[in-house]
Image 1: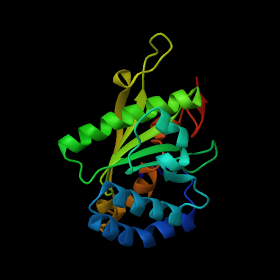
Image 2 (image 1 turned 180 degrees about the vertical axis):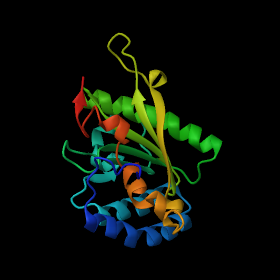
Image 3 (image 1 turned 60 degrees about the horizontal axis):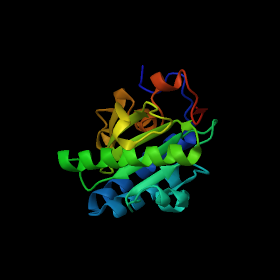
Image 4 (image 1 turned 90 degrees about the horizontal axis):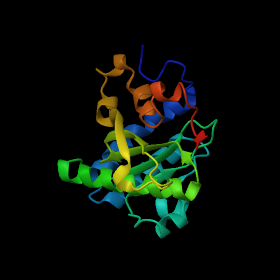
Amino acid sequence: MCPFLHNTFVPGDAVELFRQRLPGYLQEVRQANTEAGKAFAFLTFIRQVFADIDADTASRLIPQLERHVAVRSGTLIVKGRIDALLGNLVIEFKVSLDEARLTDAVGQLRKYVTALWAIDGVRTNYVLMATDGRRFKVYKPSAPMISGVVVPANVVLEEVNLMDLETARSEDARRKCPVTSAWGALRMPQRWTDSRRLGQQAR
């Protein structure tokens, strides 16, 4: 069975839009040579595919975030609802996912989720992503409470998915259900959401 297809409703019109828009997005994101450029290309893409999405650069969507952490131009946030197709995502864009840039992205994601938990006042379920616009490393964050405070150094990121949108273009990969896999990369993995609905908040 295709990954992310089990117990996952994917509207046919959105799947078709995804198929139609993906080649153009990949061409644009390959040409982008800055983190901000890649983030803008992806933001445009998901706004075209997902109706009524609440997504923007981190500083625009959550202005108070800048009081807690230095916000980069290559960072996007998607705010979800319990019934949303997309959950709460924090996406850190890099020019490439080489070891040094990936390490930097992971460190920045730890800072972001720590700040967001402080702003929310609860342990909102966030999906964290490090990406070059084509490959997405997806993480589930967790952290122990020490004296009632979470600090970035204590945040553990469990890698729960790896998605390559270039592979999703391949006709040879169609039997592996690439579109639903790509859709799934923008959702919490099924094994996670079986016990927690998207966007649910946990103290």
